[in-house]
Image (cartoon, rainbow, N blue to C red; front, side, top):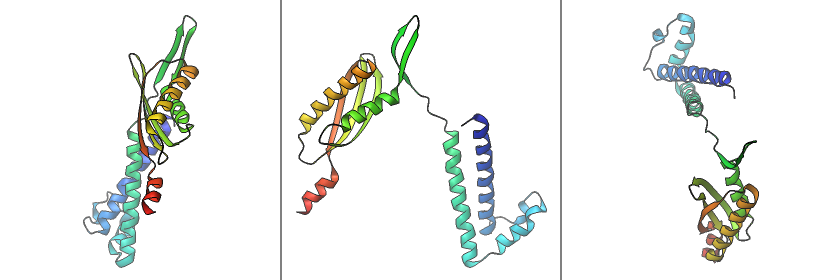
Length: 189
């Protein structure tokens, strides 16, 4: 999203958040319509203040939901974008070759998920002085041999990353757990 578009989203979200807050304050009686800088909204403010029962509750509920949504949107837009981290594959006089660290993470996860007993895999990749440090959290089928699966995962992930990126892999840490759904089925029997 361009900087202009982000600025427009931030301004609009802030305006809606302010309006939602004012509506809630008027509907709860904490604020009067006279607070508003102009008499443009006097009629609307008076209707909000006069609303009772279900109508008043609906006005408050909708305003709170809109305010929370705009607050979430503002936080998302203001927190900034994550900078992509590129890992250097090679560098020559003609230029350099890099790969996005996120791509290496995806390669590790897809490689791990292809191992027979692995149900789910979530990996992270960090760059260290001796090469990449990869941590994988895997969920495996109940009854699987975790030491064998860990060894197989380490070998396959190391081979895939070395083969496809040429990057050295310093270590691969595997944290395994049995798949909870299989455990529940076994416990019921």
